[in-house]
Image 1 (cartoon, rainbow, N blue to C red):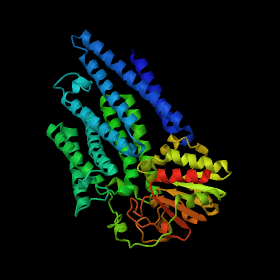
Image 2: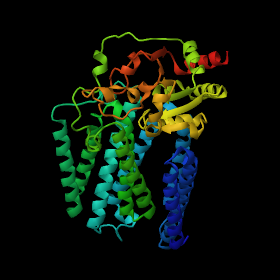
Image 3: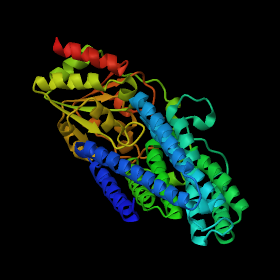
Image 4: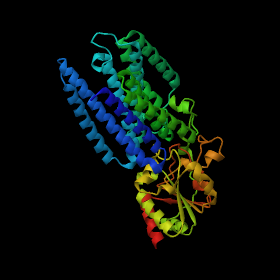
Amino acid sequence: MSMNLITSCYLVASICFIQALKGLSHPTSSRRGNLFGMVGMAIAVLTTVGLIYKLGALSLQEGGTTAGLGYVILGLLLGGTAGTLMAKRVEMTKMPELVAFMHSMIGLAAVFIAIAAVVEPQSLGIVAQLGEPIPAGNRLELFLGAAIGAITFSGSVIAFGKLSGKYRFRLFQGAPVTFAGQHWLNLALGLAILGLGLAFTFSGDLTAFAVLLALAFVIGVLIIIPIGGADMPVVVSMLNSYSGWAAAGIGFSLNNAMLIVAGSLVGSSGAILSYIMCKAMNRSFFNVILGGFGAEAGAGVQGGSQEQRPVKSGSADDAAFLLGNADSVIIVPGYGLAVARAQHALMELAEKLAHRGISVKYAIHPVAGRMPGHMNVLLAEAEVPYEQVFEMDDINPEFGQTDVVLVLGANDVVNPAAKTDPHSPIAGMPILDAYKARTVIVNKRSMASGYAGLDNELFYMDKSIMVFGDAKKVLEDMVKAVEA
């Protein structure tokens, strides 16, 4: 396999990755985007295997071995098998945790490659022979790739625990973990990592490299623990960006164009997505990146101190009657819908309503669920027509003319306090204007607060009816009632 052919294959793979990102920018083209991504990755992997085989052949000519190729093939088989099994078994509600796990593995891979490059640079072609010093430029790239990779790994582990919500260890709890002097400690660790990185860059001191790696693992934990559950979608996209930059840094060290291009695409797109989501949540982009620096004390804990207030409640039959007599319905899906795995029952209900001539649309908030695009993926799994799914800015003007809004498991993204209470922790956060509809039906298991820990004024409005219960069971009962 000639180097010209390898370069051409990497170029084709890069084009596929760019087309994948373009395709994933809209639900109607997302499947094509995924296909481009898979094809691009297959080309990149096969080309890399071919490159390793070529290097192995050259090694044989010089009296070496091709054992390295066997390890690569073994790693591909083990990793590919594990990834396939995990992807097939994971439930839709666990998809955010899977994404966080994948980010952690990318970060850890970057750390391992950096360590291997520092210990045996001649094996990766960084230097000609053992004992020859690593060039300062390569040491800088290794420092950046390793540090970002370590931060990505430990931060993703904490994010995984927070998203899972089943571990009792305090660091894995959804509530922010803060302590006095936290931001000053983060600043000190950041400066120490920078200083040690520069020391390694200019002197090649292995001790400095080892210490900076250890500190990077620590700061990865510290910048994620003060971020509450409400900001988890931003954290997931931010860690996605970090993993890309870690891969790009290592790509420069290995002089691998594919790693540089793919890492840069992931890093830049993740950063842009994080910015968009911060805007959608009225969060400061830099505050989230710096571990919630400047976050208001007490935010996200108010829900526990709210007094019990009366609400209107009804049955699935009551809700079905209102829906069946409406001319227009907007459905707002939330995490509760994903937990109940009720997307197929929802699709069946929407079809029954549409068959009766009722206009049915879906409203998606950018941060609904626990990861970017969570609700879009959920609805796509139930084969909801893309033309019925609308983003927040497109659907908000229609709520005022809508007969019934059906809110399924969503909370903070429909809380009117964001617009009516300037002292609320979510004040200024863009929301879906469900409160403007003529009637609002809300399905929840209980009156428990959402990620932000706030009472939702929508639930207590005269136009709102609460239907308590598991979303799947409630929706199935609604379908039967509509049919009757």
